[in-house]
Length: 228
Ligand SMILES: C[S@@+](CC[C@H](N)C(=O)[O-])C[C@H]1O[C@@H](n2cnc3c(N)ncnc32)[C@H](O)[C@@H]1O
Image 1 (tube, rainbow, N blue to C red):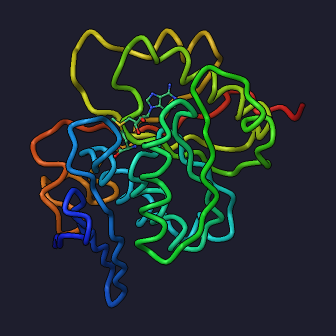
Image 2: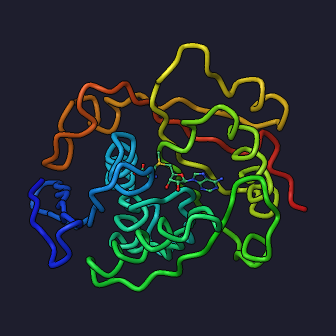
Image 3: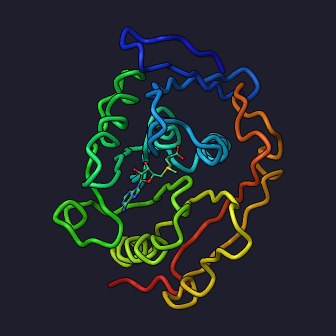
């Protein structure tokens, strides 16, 4: 990862470089130097981005939504790998929606950015097309939001029954769990071992992330994906 200062002195651009044999792809992420959530790349984001990179062939031409995207590293990487990507963050946090757009601009992309607040059935949510994949890195960080997040995921999966939710989760407390909610919403959850996509290291994409944080990768889908 390399970093450079933008003309706005509050913004530093970090570069994440993904490599596979002779193939190299760099995503630039402007981080606002502000302690608010969603302003910088979280350890989970680079792990999910690594999963996206290793599975890029599955994403080509597919419709992808990133939720709680913040600076949008996984979503922008998916777009650079050929997916049709929409980025979203809370409709109530316009500065986070600005971050999504800023990362697109830094990577010469113009992706749709929509306000989608977990737990709310909004016009933006209803207008989304059929999805193939939903991405969410470090969205499970506030237990009081877990039910709202999974409500939104179930709403989207019922409209796109064969879609998958690819998500990374940072272990912050042994007491936190989404297991009861997965059961309540009849969801299937597959834990993906980090070593299976070469993410079992403290340094990914030339960065100092995920560092020593414990991050898990999960794929969540409907248990019974019957068509509506
Ligand atoms: C810990 S940050 C993770 C950001 C980014 N995905 C990453 O990993 O770098 C959590 C993100 O969730 C967003 N968020 C918080 N509450 C939300 C809500 N109620 N609905 C939708 N997004 C929300 C925040 O704005 C922020 O971008």
